Length: 297
DNA sequence: CTGAGTCAAGGAGTA
DNA sequence: TACTCCTTGACTCAG
Image (cartoon, rainbow, N blue to C red):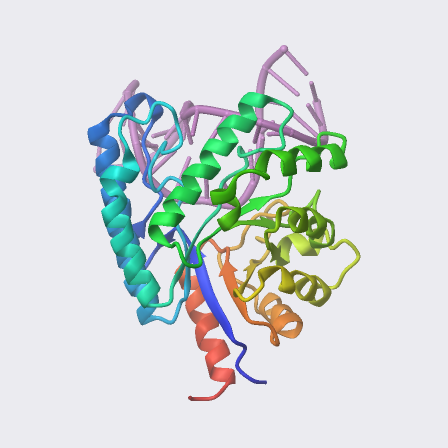
C-alpha cells in the first residue's frame, strides 16, 4: 500500500505537554484582567502545541472555541482582536511556516437556522468571532466546522433559514465547512446545502456509520472531495466508546476504523482530524502506522 | 487540598 | 413542564 497523502490532527489540547486551549472562566467572573490571563495562557499553549505538532508530523490542530472566553459575548470587556491580534498573528505565521492548519468547531448552541431571531443573532456573533480568530491565526487555510441545521420538523424550511442567515456572511463563509451528523444530515443530504453556500463538506466516519444516506464511506468521501477545490479535504475519524452512548468518542482509534478509512480514502488528499479522548496520544500511532506501511522514506 | 456541582448558549426526546 | 444529552473539560466553592 502506498503512503496516503494525509495529514493528521487532534483537538484543542495535548496530554504530553499538558497544554490546552480550553481554559475559560465563568461569565460572572468575566473581567478584563481575568480574560486577558486566560487568552494569554491559551495562546502560549497553542504555540507549544504548534511546535510539538511540527516535531511529530501532525499537520492539523483544532483550536478551542473558548480561545478567547466569551469572545463573542456582548459582555466581553475589551477589544480582544486589538489586544491579542499581534500574538495571534505571530502564532499564525509560525503555523503557516510549519504547514500546520488551525481549525475551529463552534458548538451545538450555534444555530443560524433557528426560528428565533435572537438565537440567529447570537449564532452569527459566535461564527463571526470564530472567523475573526481564524483570520488572525490562520488566514490561509483555516476552517471552521459546523453541523447542518436542526430540522425542527421541517428540514427544507430549516435549510432555507440556515442558508438565508449565512448567505451574506462573507468572512464566515470564507472559513465555513459543514459536517454530517449521526441523525439529521448525511453527507449526501448535506451536499446540496453546502453547494448553495459555496462551502465544503466534512465527512465524519463515526457519524457516517450511523447515518450513511445510502452511501458507502468511499462514496461519501469521493462526493465531498470536489467541494474542497484545491484545498485538502477535511475528514473526521473516531471510534465508538465501548459501552458509551452512540456518538461517544473512544479513548483511541480502533484499528478497524483506521483500516476502513484507509480502504475508502487512501487515494484522496485528506486532513484527518482524530476525535479521540486521548488527543495526540491517539494520533501518534496512526502517524507511525501509515508511515511504516510506506516503508522508510 | 479535594471532590462535587456547575457552567452563556439550542434543540430534540423522554417522562 | 422539567429534565437529559450533546464533544468535553475547567472552574468554583464548600468542606
